[in-house]
Image 1 (tube, rainbow, N blue to C red):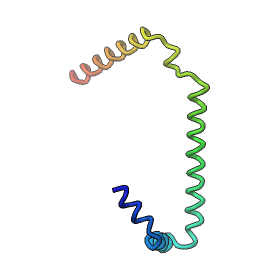
Image 2 (image 1 turned 90 degrees about the vertical axis):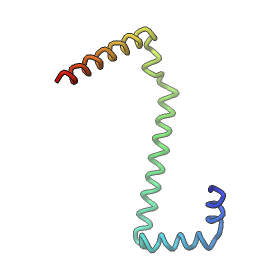
Image 3 (image 1 turned 135 degrees about the horizontal axis):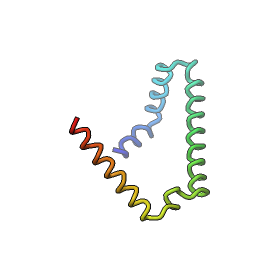
Image 4 (image 1 turned 30 degrees about the horizontal axis):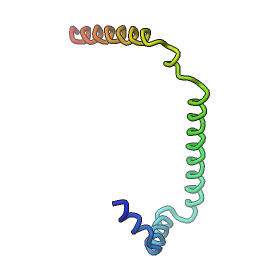
Length: 92
């Protein structure tokens, strides 16, 4: 399927028809606004990726600082709490 799409959009006539359809749908006055919005979205997306990668490199995870036994105890406590909450809901 990917090959078919590449062949269709590789044809210059199809590309011109798609661009003409975009002009008809959005109009000439809306296209600059659309391009600006796309550019801002792309910039925000890249900044988000950079922030996430920067956070991953600089700051260790909070879970890494907790030992395994403490995590298991917390999981057991929450499981018991959920089980108790479930029985209360059934009793009501």
